[in-house]
Length: 276
Ligand SMILES: [Mg+2]
Image (tube, rainbow, N blue to C red; front, side, top):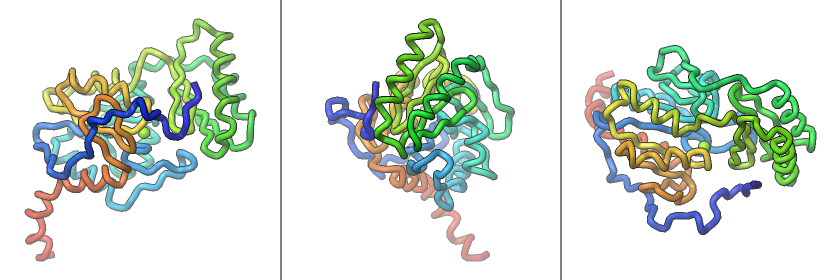
């Protein structure tokens, strides 16, 4: 189904979702911080390669990672490789490729547990959709293919129609279409961000902690939905998604809140920094 830039029709908004108060300061020793990247930590860019990482963000994340004893993870549709390039030289635990791969600690090897290779013929046919119009960008994310049309918004309908035709041709292909913000992504069915998060939360140091998940897009809704099961809280960005405990207006508010979680550390560190 074609989705608009504003992915949530009004009827889908939850009137109960309030802005996340600055007074919400969870104990870092008790929580796991789980973060979507694009549209949540980082502002969306015309193309995925053009995202801008504000100075200091990777450091903030690194400090939170240490203060939570390692229980901070990215939960993204991007591959682990891609995530590492964004935050280099820092590395974090992560669920990548919409749950296709996972890394439990910052420096462990990627574990790709749920990712059979996408059929080559299928990939070729989907890739041909990018030829429908200039401005459609094809991204091979390893475990999925993404057709970005932020630069060709008029092509949205044609893209989804072409994908539907391919799916009708291959009714048994185990694929799933993920509509996002100006992106149509096709991945293997059988894993999602939610299955990745469920699995991540069974491993130390995440196990037994209360997960706080922040996400902005349709693919994050599966994680919003499992937070109650895990005793956790979900927050959306840019809209009041159903089932969340609160929302942030934009990624800069998420970044400010994450810095705010470290305020007590700054208070302790300040007298010493004067000595430097
Ligand atoms: Mg996102």
